[in-house]
Length: 321
Image (cartoon, rainbow, N blue to C red; front, side, top):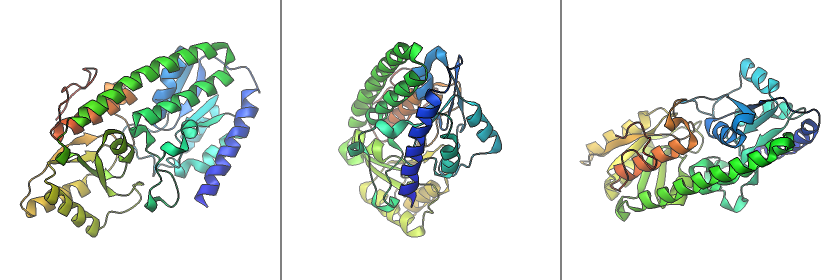
C-alpha cells in the first residue's frame, strides 16, 4: 500500500508540474519551499539569486516523524514550487504533498537517481532506503532534478541554473574524493560505524565501512534489548574504539552500548555527534550539505583511527572532538 501511495504521489506530482509550470510567469525571486535542509541547500546552490528558499524542517528535527503544521501548509501553498527528498523520507507529509501537486510543481529531488544505486533493505517493507544523501556521488544526481525543475518554471534563467548545477557538482565530486581518501585511511579492522539508527548504509557503501544502527532505517522502530546486546558483542569482538550519536535521534541507545561494552571489559568512547536526517545550525558551515558531510567524514575518520585534518576538507569545521 505504501508503494502504491508513492507512485500515486509521483504521478500527481508530474501532473502538478505540467499544470503549474505553464500557468503563469514566475515572480522574482522565485519562492521555493523545501522540506529538509539537504534539499533546501541543493535548491539554494542551484537557484542562486533567482530563488528564495524557505526550509520547513530545521536542525535536529526528525523527518521520519514530522507532520506538517498549519503554518507549514500555508508556507507550501504560498510558494511557486516545492521540493522534497522523496523515497518516503517525509512519509507523514505525503497527503499534504499530494494535495499541493494539483496546482504547483512538487518535485522529489531523488526522482532522477538511477534505481540501481538505491538500497532496498529487507526490513524496510519493500521500500528504498531514503538516506541517499549519505552517498555524495548519488546525491549529486539530485542536482540535475533541481536544475531541470527550475529551468522549466523559469526558462529565462535556465542557463544560470545549469551553470550553478555544474559548479556545485564539481564541489560535490571533490568532497566525495576526500571521503574516499579519509575513510580509506582507517585501519581495515576498525572500519565499523555504529550509530543510533540505520541512516548510514549509503555512507558505508560509498566509503567502505561496515555500518550498524541500533534502530532501523525509520526512527519509528524501537531498539530491543536483543539488538543492543548483539551490538555490544560485536563491539567487544572487533574491539571497536568508538560509537556515534546523531543530532536528530536521542542518544540513550548509544549510551547503553557504551555501558554494555564496559561491563564486558571493553572501554569505548562516543566518537562525536553525526548529522543524519538533519544538518547543523543555519548560518554555519555544518548547516550546509557540504559542511554536513565534511563533518561526518572527518569525525568518523579521526575517531576510528584514520587521518583527516581537524578542520575538514575546506578548513571550515567549527570543531572536532
